Image 1 (cartoon, rainbow, N blue to C red):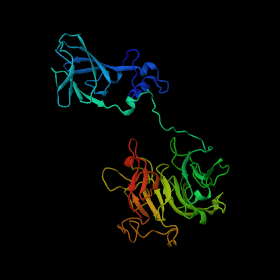
Image 2 (cartoon, rainbow, N blue to C red):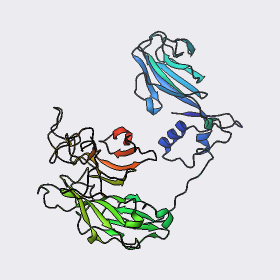
Image 3 (cartoon, rainbow, N blue to C red):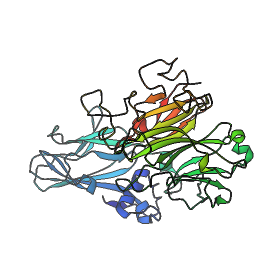
Image 4 (tube, rainbow, N blue to C red):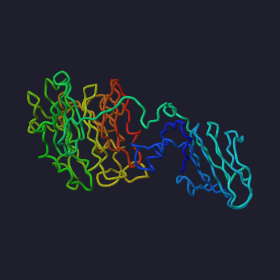
Length: 437
């Protein structure tokens, strides 16, 4: 696309977002857009006209396209130049949405003849065509209205307004994947945070940065992160939740990718472990030997582990798990599915395993004889649940692929970021479970 410099002493136009992006594409930079860019105000298009359609020539975005759409901005001046390619009668005419002609060139029937049309784009422009070959030689016009920034007095790529600065507060991590604040910590120490380092450690971060020694080190009982099948690894320390009364009882809960434990099939990758720990009285360290296993989940693959752990406003502990890994709901560890379009999948299964679901556990009541926890009576498949007897009682929600992070808002709504496949994320990256307490 070529542009013509405006007349001397006239004010250069404000660079719209579209024009900035075009400049970036052409030059590879934003900062330092020179006067030659900011001072140009006429955009040019070149076509070849023949009975089979308008043939785009320039700018490069339309080169070789037949009847390409023209992306214009209201108030901007444009120039269309075209050449008669076949010696048949043609003209270039712009229409509104009702088909009324707005501006156009003369009709020429000499092969090799050229015509030029200069015009200012308006919001009513909808199409361009040849009035002789109305169907074959016809393209769409898209008009973008100028924003307030477009008519700002001073040309600037970035408008004036609030600025954002970045300050490094801690370093020395391998792969930080989680960030938590302990309940009541605001009163005890408002600058104290807990960071999950995927390789197996949890660190305290305060006003002095990352502590030298980990708050909790689980590397001796975990898989070796980075030893998975591929160039990435989704195992590790994946979730941390402090008990609502942490300042009094020092209890915390962690989900991590443990070494394969008894009961996990030999061909499975690892055992997912939900465990309770207890911090020391001053809250500076957690003794790894204080571990009490709450739940063990056999994990067939190294990926799709999920892992967020959190307490809800009801006081129950929630654990979100991935669907077992591999890809396309198939592969080792996936149960037979209930529809013909796929061989397997755990997301819709609620009877064979916990994979692809969110569990809701009572870690404060007396555990029953089969578990290290109690089951809330109103879980969907529990005693007072809506679907009693049709699935494992720990289930709260299911149908997920790889729920990576989760949180409750102030109104009790439960939001889960569920990682999608390739181009798509489930629900745009978040699904809301709107049960309230």
